[in-house]
Image 1 (cartoon, protein in one colour):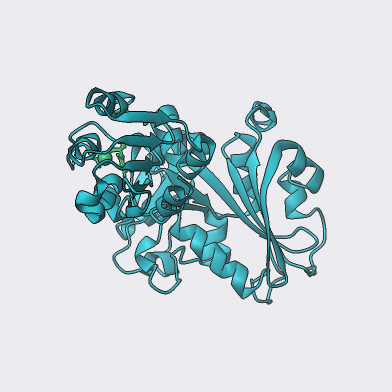
Image 2: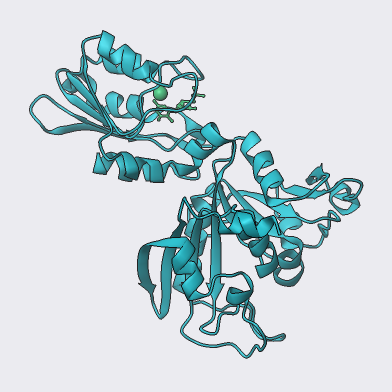
Length: 361
Ligand code: AOF
Ligand code: ZN
């Protein structure tokens, strides 16, 4: 199952609205005979990939799947049927598929065919890999990762006239990897104006995994000359307030207007488009708005070893993410060192509703 989870991760950010599932088939003699994962665009599914590789060697064997095999005829035939046809002896799956077309029916199909079914192996890990799919299907919201790159003194910006980079080249590459593993990337008007980001994944071979660019800009500000507007054949979504948005109209970005351009409303809109994983790459003001509405699930924090020559309250403190607060409201899941930068990954403590309370004023 561990291997299946790792294989599933290969699809993260590439499977559209589908979950990123992994599958390993072990033959009757205990050797791995097939492995697969949900392919780009969401199909074929993991099980059929693994079974194709295994061929007749799957007979009498065991399949390990990170999600309950599907039972519906969607764009492909049901994976549960394929597992039955392959004459497996047993199937281990990590977690039930909340998609109402499946929701236990996949497991039932397998049982009725006489296959031994085991549910729940490495469930927590599987929930983590597919947090976005689970959250969208059962709660109508995507999973949100806030990416932050800060100086030692807590600033996300450099003084005017200096290069904008705070962290080193390796951290920035990891940042691009984050883009590749998310389905949409959200930024705000301020970042568009000051940084002029392209918001694509520029790692070799991963350009096609660039996330859907989404700009939150009350007035619909989206200049034709921006790098984002200049990206060839890129569908960009501009989210603005009702009655505005002339800039975006002018050069064919998709304009979407809201009575109230709140993080919650934006995330509901993205989930309705089938977006599972959202990366938030923005300035402290928009980040604080998402944090206040409890709309940040993970924080990917890159910390440079040097200070920048900025004064006043730091961005980290303005967002309410000084070390004590971060530790109080988020759990640290991982720590790494990238050259001279420190990296840490944080997950919001489920029971903490401080941000939501702050949002109510
Ligand atoms: C699996 N294995 O690898 C994946 C599954 O539109 P379709 O036909 O591709 O169906 C989409 C649904 O299939 C999706 O909502 C989820 O329930 C399931 N995804 N199932 O057995 C896989 N990706
Ligand atoms: Zn399937």
